[in-house]
Amino acid sequence: MAFFVYYLFFLTATISAVFFLLLRSSRLRRLRLPPGNLGLPFVGETLQLIAAYKTENPEPFIDERVSRFGSIFTTHVFGEPTVFSADPETNRFILQNEGKLFECSYPGSISNLLGKHSLLLMKGSLHKRMHSLTMSFANSSIIKDHLLVDIDRLVRLNLDSWTDRVFLMEEAKKITFELTIKQLMSFDPGEWSESLRKEYVLVIEGFFTVPLPLFSTTYRRAIKARTKVAEALSLIVRERRKEFERGERKNDMLAALLATDNNFSDEEIVDFLVALLVAGYETTSTIMTLAVKFLTETPLALAQLKEEHEGIRAKKSESEALEWSDYKSMPFTQCVVNETLRVANIISGVFRRAMTDINIKGYTIPKGWKVFASFRAVHLDHDHFKDARTFNPWRWQNNSGVTCPGPGNVYTPFGGGPRLCPGYELARVELSVFLHHLVTRFSWVPAEEDKLVFFPTTRTQKRYPINVKRRNASC
Image (tube, rainbow, N blue to C red; front, side, top):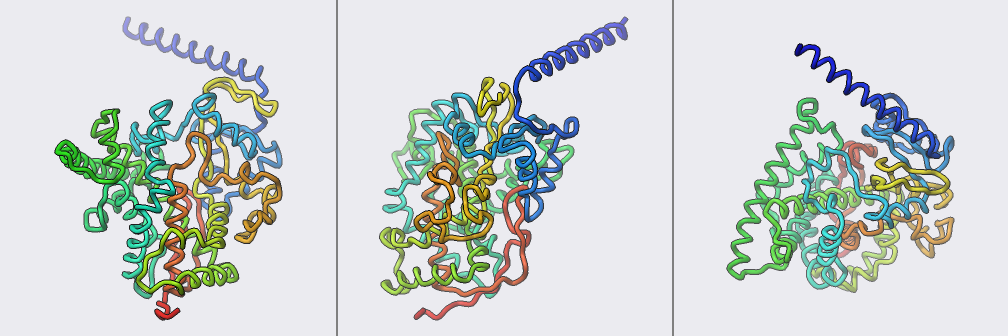
């Protein structure tokens, strides 16, 4: 009898599943989907995507599909059918319709490690309020009046410790992590911050792995590291909450979170801080490293950058800190920043999920499907930028290397719409200050050949080792 019941249940479930799949496939056939290839069952084209991004040149994955299907195509990656967009107008449409037609959607591994209360996963009015709060701590006036002095001091402090040979990516990560810790919680560098940073490295390694601890050692290690990070931050939040109740105030992000009317729990604040630490630490440090790599490989650009910064330094004493007026007098540096962001594409694009059937460019994106707005594909498209895959900072002088009008539509290194990266100006300032002190205090050569890879994150294979030599103080 029991066997018959189990058999009947299994048969009913199977018939229901088949019926559902037939209905769905029938519905999809009626829609005009973007052309493409869903690849193998379950796996789709995920393996091809990962294989491409583990090389120094991942472009063929998108190039080949754009040449066959056009700038909007269908594929199947990370377990779901996905519409890829390499079209700037479509990308802008996706970004501007956040919360209306599309909602943010990321792989489970990222969601689990950041926490359900992170800014990346917030939606609706709560996201709008918290995004605004975050931007208020990283806008131009705050950087000018409060943060610039810490940025200058911490960059100097780290460069003072350099030996004859350094791994630039590691050094850049120390700088950006210390800057982010200072901005969020007013901590200066020390054993506590360095211990926390080492755990963060493990958390980030788990972002693009299978989110099953049983099958992935990397993910299991990341979950343990995330727990340690949360415990360390929880202690700080509890202590600061007691200080806040006693009337003690600090001018940092944690103080602002404690002062909001939302009455956030400790867990919610920790999740929020975890995500901001990842954002401020990983992306900016990679941009710093790649800016130096690209400049080293482009001697004329490096020479012009040195000339600009030596001119600024000549007006100041050796120990005098940079001021806002100095930052605003770095026009070629901003060209270097723009071009590094365009070529490096630290954020290669964003995943979103269609909230309803969406008609665009003559196609229908079905409700529930994922879309991927590829910034990288647009930034490296010769139709938008002349010699797009060549590092050329001079293109930003009068936009001479932008081949189509309206560069705001084709240049989106910080995303756009309601989820525009709130730290975009802060990242530019940090990179500019770092380049200033680097080129005025050191000369360097690569210690060995190093290549770029783009999975699971953009980085150099060997952390970009360089041999450095301190320049004379009079330089």
